[in-house]
Image (cartoon, rainbow, N blue to C red; front, top):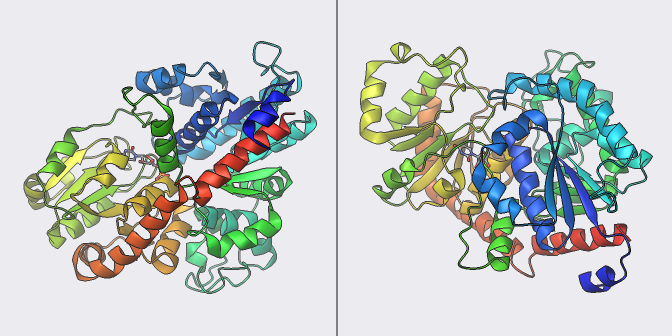
Length: 488
Ligand code: UDP
């Protein structure tokens, strides 16, 4: 059935409630999907918890873009978190604890009593919560509303470390008991020859199985297969290794990645060509001065360095990475997010030679327009914390990576970058200037051809996946059809 056929039969109009976890990366992904749903005529209520919504209210470009859609609205719900968007990962559990105590009971009450209805006559017909919000799956069931989870961490992490966590615990692989971190984990179907203990998601390193972070994953592992569907930000070819196994547990998977390029393509095709589109949903202001700095460099000569919106490092780690990059002689554009250095940044602890050389070959900004940076011809490599969005953005542009993962899915992503997709070097659990220098030289110079060749192959497949007949476009169309059908 086409959209029109289903629409004509409607008495209740499709109205999706989207509910992301309150962090910059997931909110960004949810907004992109929300906009795609809006373009297809579906009504969307976008539920943000209050503390993440506050900085978004100041981001007038995002607000004005969404104000174009009469079928879109923001709603907020308290989360008991006093401060603004967290700038470091140590706040993650604090925020999730606030959600658990304050948001969860309120959300249940509001959902069950129909408070999210649009102008009282349009009830929620489908719920799309972040897969981390396992409680939302329970509430949807209680309210008899179909639910499709959206997982914004990587599929390789979801499979190896979340959905299989009960298996890992049963097999004695988790918690780690002083075992060899390089030992292969053979209990997960599909990754028996790939994933070592050190490559599991960072939560698996916890020795306390009753900890909040483990509890959240165990709940997610049970909730996700009970939803009517699962949305993933990947494309079929990239994760073919694990998708076939995952589909045995969650048969209805929609692979709609790379979401940022699918979003950009569909938005461009569906809006007035004269209308200026800024595709960014970044909560923080981007410093675009680095773009003219990049213009001064030859193609593929600059290393881009960023550890995303939450990861942190010590000043010693900063100095080691800094030396490694400087000693490689590679010009660099480095994002130094305020709050990203544990204990604060103190220039007096940085050797003068690093500061002097940086003036010659470096550019430092607090927050960059990353998608545009990675698309700039001068960029030849990316030293990254291996966040899933950054990884997808780099793969899409065919940029080789040096991976220095911090937490959550990053440990798994960096392993897949090196071992499965062969687009970079994984230096996890080390922070040594010699190793950084070697890894940077590898991707920028000595092994550049090898990495670039596979990076370009993935980039081309990513591009194909979002064409009209590409797998991600087809999965998005199916998702929209299913939402319409579920709303009948
Ligand atoms: N990002 C950005 N400017 C920066 C650094 C990062 O816009 O200076 C964006 C980046 O494009 C990506 C997101 O922030 O979309 C980071 O997401 P990721 O999943 O890589 O990491 P997280 O921040 O969630 O750890």
